[in-house]
Amino acid sequence: MKKEELLELYKKGRLDFCDLDLQGIDLSGENLEDIMLSGSDLTGANLDGVVLHKAKLQHTVFKNACLNNADLRKVNLFGADLRNVQMQNADLTDAKVKVAIFNGANLCGSKLFDALINQVDFSGANLTDVDLRADFISKCDFTDAIKTDLILKYSNTILDCKGLFQK
Image (cartoon, rainbow, N blue to C red):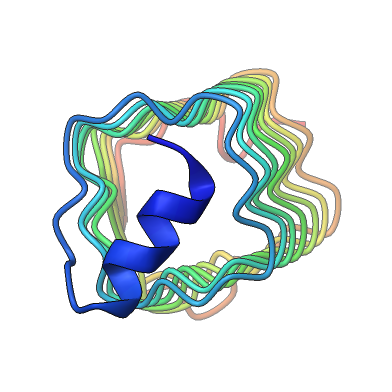
């Protein structure tokens, strides 16, 4: 599906864009609140500054995509593949991030405040200045992640996380 068609359908009220091939699409700066992109492939997409507030993104592939400055508040990222994604200064406040892969991702300056984070692979990710004051962090892998100035203070629950407290 092309950008123009997606935006036209969205503006007419369609929210379901699940299981689509959207590789390389440029939706930078667009407001796509409440959109459903579950199962879609957005590999290499430009989503810089996109508003995906309350979006359904289960099992969505974002490999090598740009999500810098994205509004991802209250999204559902269950099973999402975000390997090598550029996600600097993104807002994932109140997000549900379960069984997701952020391997090699750049999340510098991003916010995961009050997020639910379970079984997430952050190995090799750049978490510099990330606000990880999440509601719940469990069974995550932080092996070889860059954790310079990572904000963990006041996280409610942290359980069984590999490499989180290693330099």
